[in-house]
Amino acid sequence: MDTKPGVIIIEGHVQGLSNVRALGEQGIPVWVIDKSDCVARHSKYCQKFQICPDYDSPLFIDFLLNFSEKNNLKNWLLLPSNDHAVYSISKNKEKLSTCFKIITEDLNTVLKIYDKVELLKIAAEIGVDYPLYETYNSISECDQTKLNFPLITKGNNGLSFYKKTKTKVLISNTKEELSDNLKKIESKIPIKETFTQEILPYSEENKTISFTCFSVKGEIKAHWVGVKLREHPLRFGTATLAESIEKPELYIPSKKLMQILQYTGICEIEYLLDVRDNKYKLIEINARSWLWVGLAKACGVNYAKLAYDYVNGVEIKESKSYQVGTVWFNPITNIFFGIKGLLLGRVKLKSIFENIPKKKINALFQKGDRKPGFMYFLLLFKIFKTR
Image (cartoon, rainbow, N blue to C red; front, side, top):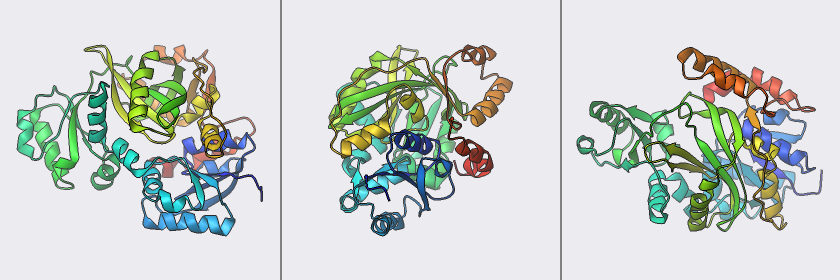
């Protein structure tokens, strides 16, 4: 076995595949663990694959510790691509640190990020804009809402909310709808564990923008910015097409967030422009790499390698430059949901032709490593069923 310390990628979906390639191309040993078959295990850079328990199960931590001992993986980096895995690793960081190198933040910081109401309170404290929201202790309180419809109701903790309600969000266009949605939620979880927020005015030209960075104790060492050009579902969804852009006005609010959190590691901060006041509003933070992290790497910011270097004592020098104008796409979901968007009038034909001449990064098929792309086809039913 390679004596160089390697990396264990936790969850081998598209972002896991990107990180496997980003590390494997650098000669770093990479193993993948997932709850079931996944595309990343089929990359030529994946040296070993193992099925593991659910990431939010107590068995998962025991599995990792036994996995390290059995395979002599002392000082390998754990690099999660899943929120449940992030939470479990953070919660058990001290125990896992006896065997692995950990880039995941401490539980206190993770909870501030994944409790969305807590995050919005922090944003208010440091002057970062966000869509207005309210919290309710009872259904009757929503009758006095001062928010402008339409509204979106989410769980304070998205992980537990989805697990209990089987939905990510509920949208309300009237007070009656809001009351009905809260009643649905109340049958599953207490209303006080949710918050209701204004939906920013929708426009095909106004897309979610991700400011991503690698920080060390709150100091941004490298950053990259991208925009979702197309997503599924067609709104509040996951990217199928994205582009590398510059958005310097997002650097200061992102820096404020990293500093107050004293964040170390990889993160994605999502913003959306509010056309009513022409200000970018904070949507959420992901304390991990995201689906289209491969685009950042293609543009010169290799987040997986930065994480590996940091935990192995390599100095991370500050870098603010990266390529712009490069497009990332999932060839399968982009075609399917692009056609759906055209039929529903949500995607303009002009936008399809605009991206033809741009440099493109294929999320699945890479020269010399095409098997994951073909396996994505074979795993398609499972992927759409579980995501």
